[in-house]
Image (cartoon, rainbow, N blue to C red; front, side, top):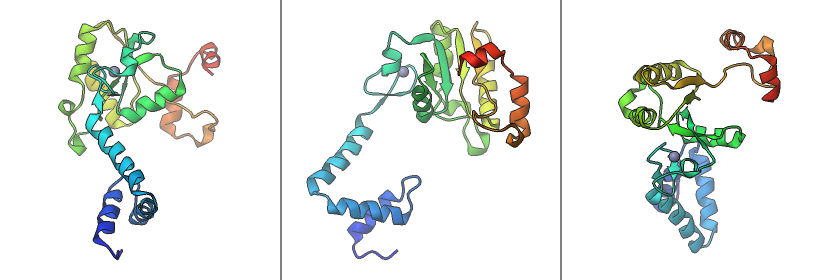
Length: 206
Ligand SMILES: [Zn+2]
């Protein structure tokens, strides 16, 4: 893409480094900014820079936070005995959006994946073990993606905390609501049968 200005080109290159943004989309965004007042563009870039500079991560659960402890951990109405283990911040946001969970979280910051060079030491696993040792955690709920890396991570953490009297569960894996059985893959259908629910709890959870 030939651009008539190196300033324009630099801005397009920066935008196109963002996930899901190609060169054409980057150019469209930059041209949009060019139409704005200088002050508005300044505010836009200041907001992003301030967010990056000042954002903190919760010392207890590693969720994003404005202070040392995040709003979820600081909320006395949340059940601190239940800890939902997730891979990243997007998972916290997704689960919070369901309004079905009143416990707290622990954000691992990734998942064990030797092929990608990610081992347990690069994740927030030690702080999770410390939480279980020090706090009165009665249930650990794994809400990780259903794949080999997710299962490996669950297995590793389970081994690390087996001396503590803490119940370990995982979110159900099964047929999507509104889905059709004949189109489900064998593994999903097999797991759905193995993890079947009493019909009373199925109805009451709907
Ligand atoms: Zn927190």
